Image (cartoon, rainbow, N blue to C red; front, side, top):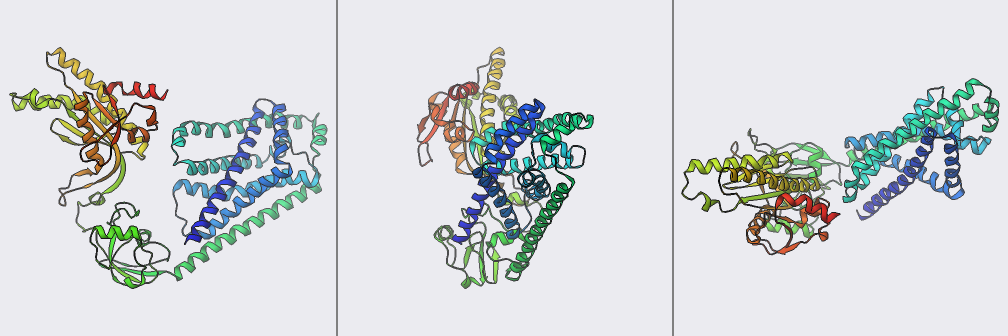
Length: 559
């Protein structure tokens, strides 16, 4: 297992390194083509400088080694893949990766190969003239886009988990569109110019002599070489595809039988966890934490075959001990069956209508905002219930739109307060939405208080606490009567932060975790540490006297 993991990591690292080498080459190659938009001399000079590196012994060795390794590992990954199912972006990258050689081999045959073997001066003008008045011009333009899109997808998948990359995405997206556009514009401009000279004819002999234009015999040899390379690649691709099919057949023959009590019987390949086997075969199997071993909702009772399983590893054993599991109970996300098993899922759908997937819950890292009105009891003492409700509705009408505009939702109203949740694809976006909502609430409160003052009514003061952490979202209650709610320690923490604002006489406390998730450096702010009731460790948070001033404070500290 460790050997397979090391091998997988080595292959991944090699593909990344070789991909970066090729992407860097493509970047400067496309810039070179784009310079044709500005000046033919600039295009030629840039190519001369570029080829000092790429056509040196060391540069050529690095470039072509990277090309061979990258393509070879792609074929290897095709042969070893368990399935061809993948995300749309990954599928597009995968498809482009295998389409690129179909045009790249022809390009190499008529440029670098013809230069090395037949002494052709394969400068940009020669390459453009060679393919301008033929379908090859369209094919090579498609190759340019395929290479660039393939590289951009790979770069994104490599860097997408880093915080700084998420911040650069808007800029990099613009660059990703600019580079191929610039290259195609240069290709079009220079193509019209140089082809015009050839059609006009007066400079054709001199240009052909400068290019050392290949003879018919040489062209025939180049076409033959191109055909041989193309055939060789198709053979390699066919062998990889055949190996993939054979590998799947062999894995199917080595498949293990799993029978679910009150459910179907499946055959799945060895090496997968029981949870992965269930998911791969469309078997509903509850897993609140997504198979990370942090919850026990995927646990099963092993009715038959328990003796074929290795004993639980310490993390699994601890999880099972917390729920006082019997000896024949295991976590589906931790066991990898090697022999037939009969299992009973502890948590499975009951088949009734109205109990959707949300009834089991889902775990997400999100920001929550807890808000409370100060002095509400004293303010409304002696008022009629109708007046109290009227005031609360006016207050919520003023501030709740500030929450919903930023993508938040009010999870529940708590008398004179509320709990808001900011669901987003990433913790960064959730945290930023919560900060935007707090600032907007502060602004709306100022306007609302101005209207109250105009009516001769006392102003309203609030306290807000914002925190980010792991939450469980699900429907809690009997079937058909289960409202969606959130559970988690982060809710309690946000509530405690809100309560702390009363002691400090401020409107807002933002935990350091929210700032960090939103891309701000916590050490740039005047944070304070608080020992909150019900929270085991001191929590660092940013006090803000007036919530409306939060954007200025963030901008000032980051500047």
